Amino acid sequence: MTETSPAPVRDDPEGTPAAVPAIELAGVRKSFQAYGETVHAVRDIDLTVHEGEFFSLLGPSGCGKTTTMRMIAGFEDPTEGAVYLHGEDVTGVPANKRDVNMVFQSYALFPHMSVFDNVAFGLRRRGVDKAETRKRVGAMLEIVDLTGREKRRPSELSGGQQQRVALARALVNRPRALLLDEPLGALDLKLRQAMQVELKRIQREVGITFVYVTHDQGEALTMSDRIAVMNDGGIEQLDTPRAIYERPASRFVAGFIGTSNLITGQITAVGGDGAEIGYGEGRIVVPLNGASRAVGDTVELTVRPEKIVIGGERPDRGSYTSATVAEVVYLGTSTSYLVTTAAGDDVTVFVQNATNADDIAERGSRVWLSWEPRHSYAIGTA
Image (tube, rainbow, N blue to C red; front, side, top):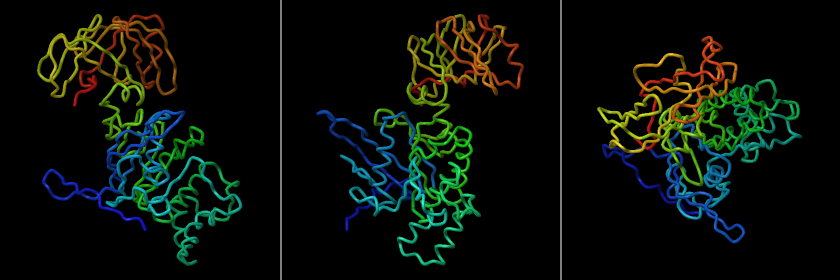
């Protein structure tokens, strides 16, 4: 039997012991050899996942998110650092000895078994009696909305229903945490969006910690309580979906999460809590949130396309600049305008089609862009 050591005790600001995290990674690194070179798949990760939290690891392919999850599950051992589950050091403990379950993109259902038998499989292997098995499987099928389909085979179910069977099979064993590796990747867009809502509902009902791996920003923003945005083996930003979207910590996060306009300029004046940047035939006002900046400093900022107003009249307040419309794309719920500012930057503007967007501007039109100062965010400020 593998010995485990307790996780370091954490204190809150008042000095009282904090709740034990569901999952904690302390200085975790994963390296391996490939073609004679050392590849660092995961670099010095420290993170804490709270009990009952829906936590997502988000990033592009090859960023280390799946490797991180596999170390939590016990399928990979870290090269350095430690993995704690509910306060116990499980580094080196095999996967089948950890109180977590994992759901993969390929659901791995037994094709010759019914829905009931697939869900009951783990309980039967553990020797749970028949009456308790029937009770727990029935309750879990009700949670995942599959009551009445107990006798069907996987081939008789839709992709979304198969995914729910895989979830029920993982949850019926009552793990302390559930790990999900791109589980919606095989579904079409409409079903994937519906299942995002269902997953969040199921997680709330069962109250189990979910750790979700995805490269889809929309999935992470829709379902997560917190998100760790990963890049090149490390965490670029760890925060709530709103904070990551509204206040990206780096150029990578700003560009990876949704659509963002990145603008660079020099400060021409500093006053109060903001800085003014001379920009083309206009200006940009940027809140600095207490950061120390001086006239002449270069600032990189981001502003989201839906925050920008496009029109024919020059504004007299806030942030504004002139631009020329390069392209107009109808997107159904909105219209996307690709414009080139007087300063030479390409900027995207989204206009909701609740307004008569067709009358706003045509390709080649000269327009004015404006937005509220609070919607500019200087990357790197707190």
